[in-house]
Each structure stands twice: as C-alpha cells, then as structure tokens.
Image (cartoon, rainbow, N blue to C red; front, side, top):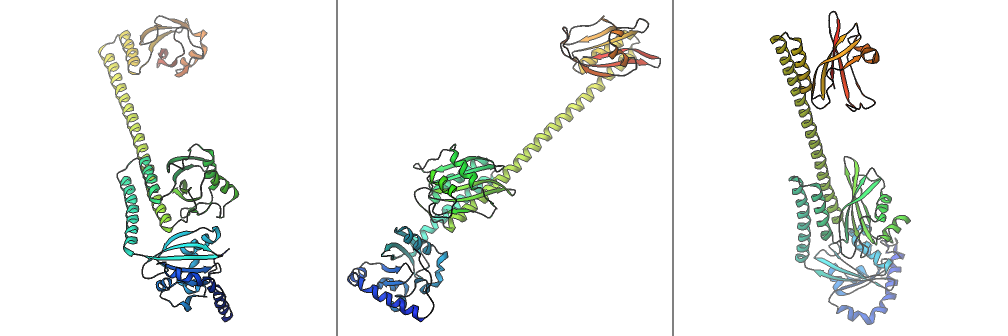
Length: 457
C-alpha cells in the first residue's frame, strides 16, 4: 500500500478523480453532520492520494473552496510540502502500511497557526483530523527544547575549557542526552584498531537495561562497522521495515531495539568510537533536530578527545624532560665526584711520596666514589709470574688482601693485562666467596712495562 504523491496528467484523469469522489460521497452522507460538529477539521484521503472529503473546518484551515480540493490528488493541492521529504508524508505512509494511528504537528499545511494532526487508517485510506494549536504554546515548547539543548552543549564546552577529566565529559554528555532525546538507551562505544570494542559509558531507561559484557553488543558494533567517514551517520527508523541486513536485523532484535541512530566519532581521521541512541519501545522517525544535536555533541566530544591527547603528549614530554634533567644532573654529579676524587688522589701524591699511602688512597677513593663492593691493587713479580694483592678497600665483599695468583693459572686474564689492555667481564659460575659479580681489570704500567693491576668488583 502506498500513499501516491501525484496524479496522472490530463483531463481524463481529473474527471475520473471527480467521479470517484462522487461515488464515495454518498457513503458519508449520514456521517457528514456528525463530522461537521466535531470541532476540528476532518479530511479523508484515499491510498492513491485522492481527497474524497473535507468538512467545513478543514476547508477553513486551508482557505480553499470544496471544489478546489475534493476529487483532486492531495500533493497536487499542496505541492510546497515536498511530500517525499516531509515528516507528514512519512507519517502517512507508515500509518497506511502498519494500519496504526499516528499524531504529529505541522507548520506546512496551514499558514495561520500550527496544526495538530491525527492520522487514522480508514477504508483503504486515511481519515485525517486537524486542529489548530496556538503559536505561543508551541513556540514555548520549542524554546524549552532549544534552551535545553544549548545548555547541554554549553555545559560540555565549559567542562572542556576547564580541562575536566575526559571520563567526566563523556559521562555527562551521555547522561544528559538520554532525557533530552527521550530515548531508551544512549551508549558510547570505544573502538580500537577496528577489532576491539568496549562500552565506555551508557544511560538507559530502567525497563531496558543492557549488559556491557553482552557479546551480542560487541558483535552488533563490529558488524555495523562500515565505510564510515566524518560526515556520515546511520539512522534506523524501524528495525522491521528499514533496509537492514539479516544479521543486523537479528542482532538488533536480540537487543530489543526498534529504532536507533548511530553517529561515528573520529579522532585525527581514525574511527575512535560510536555514539548510539536506541529506541526500544517502538519505531521512531529521527528528526533533523535529533541528528543535528548528536552531531554537535560528537563535535564537542572530539574536541575533548583531542585535548586529552594533547595533554597526554605534554605529560609524556614533561616526564621525558624530567628524566633527561635527572639523568644529566646525575651525570654532572658523577663527573664532579670523579674530579674531586682525582684531586684528592693527586693531592695525596703531591703531599706524600709513600707508594703504599698513594695506592691505598687510590683504591679507597675508587671504591667509595664509584660504589664498588671492593677495589684492590696488585703488584707483579714477573720472574716468578705471580700477582699479589697488596692494597684493598672493601665495602660489601670479603677481603682478598694478600692473595697470590699464579699468572699461568689464568692466561685469559694476564695475557691481556701484560699487554697493557683493560677489560671487563662477569663470572659465569658464582664464586663460593663473592657469588656472581662483574669486574673491571686495568693494568698499572709505566714506560718500562706493566707493574701490576687495579680491580673494581
């Protein structure tokens, strides 16, 4: 069944329409008096779009004579409605197809005031009841709605400006959208890498709870990911009637959804998430004002997300800067400590020519300043091929002072030291005395050759 919006062209079609109206009029003769006394306009329109009857009050609303309207196609009489794009046309189609009464308001049918309209299916057509509404109450209602929407957007903007936490901004937006749109559910989904989905926050009517862990929610979201772009949105006025895939329809039925509006959220041209409004009590024709509000809320959310990203980057840079400053400060302090240590050793060399005092001072300073477990110095007897530890300073490790090592027992160590090469290594097998330690060995030498070695452990 379809509500045709234009009549055939030509005089024969007009006369046919008039004849049809004449046939239908006698059926109404007994009811015309009652219809005239209703106190509201009444118009009967066939499914073809042909006007078969108007009472006097309906004619008064339109400011037209009966012969100008009866027997003619409705859309020919009111071409300015642009029927296929109007809320009125959509409501007529739905009332006919579903055989249900519907109510709406219109400013297009009647130039004088706002019309309240009730559509009632009637003998393969529609009986349309019309009643003028005062402009003031309607404008007051519109003003209240406008003020509420502006308050929501202003509130979100203020939270963004005062750098409120992102979670608070998103939660507030969702909670305030729910009563404003008179929806059953408002949901915010986060999508990562087009694979991972989780419900960030939700505001739902008590009769329509939704389990955030319900796999059907995730499945539906993943199934609905299409070629989104920043200007797209996805309205579904009626799950049972709209052009949905079988999978989408099945999932939405399981979630008890009758209508929904989905708006994508992009961050730096990447899909960040979805803002979803669902109606569970019945189908819903989404109005341009609903779509416009959601777009503006998504814009505010995007600003908050961008701000949060920038704040995270700044925090990360600050942490990096603090780390670099600390590292640089530590390096400078170590350099100063080493310079002070070298000065103390140099002063000892200048103040005393005693070899024992100088070497003992050197191992002590190295162990303390560099935080070693032990530091020792050994002198070589090249004739006997031995190395004896004469000087040592320990902090955490057992003493090794006086220990004599035969060079031939450790060729991998002394071959390098005798060539005036330093090296570092770790013990593979833990020592029963020291355990597993890291060591740095440096030769002590002059122009005539190697005199001994210095160990940091």
